[in-house]
Image (cartoon, rainbow, N blue to C red; front, side):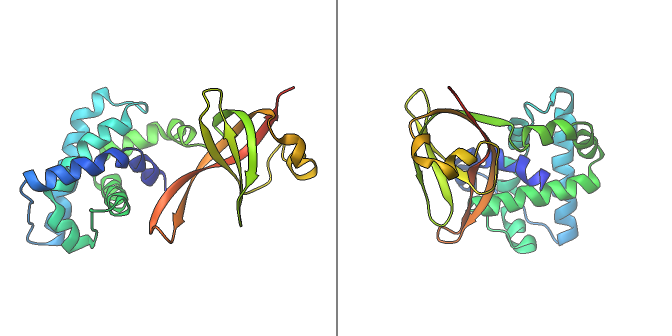
Length: 214
């Protein structure tokens, strides 16, 4: 799960790059699954070891993207043949990144050491309730799962989902009308959910705490 979350961050900008590279790069073809996996993890590990002196938890997403994108293009055929992964979708690219991360954790000591040494920071970065959103509550909507439509000081609106009990929720349940247009600071965690209609994963903001401002 941790490796999967770290891979997701750069997938949004990987999509156009993959589309371009698919037409401009020749795809490698291995003679067996073992040869393919050994080759791809070695290439990733070599890149990781080269980047490790400048690698931090803060730039890991960008650096990992630079390592993964060329592999997606170069081994596209083998990924389909041996892993059954179609990288034309975001879900497929997530699966690819997760698979490479799993192999690297087993076969790339530098990668495993980095994850171990930065585990606490990485977990905190992806941690629950570590982000905040300030503004005023415009609406309480949603079926079957409720969400708050909140407008920030710049006029932007966002949906923050009410999926579990959180500190400050009592006002919403006992006096929901009085909560509207009130200034709040909302702590939230990001959660990945699967949307069956769109057949893809989506990251939503889930409320963990509300602070009501006077």
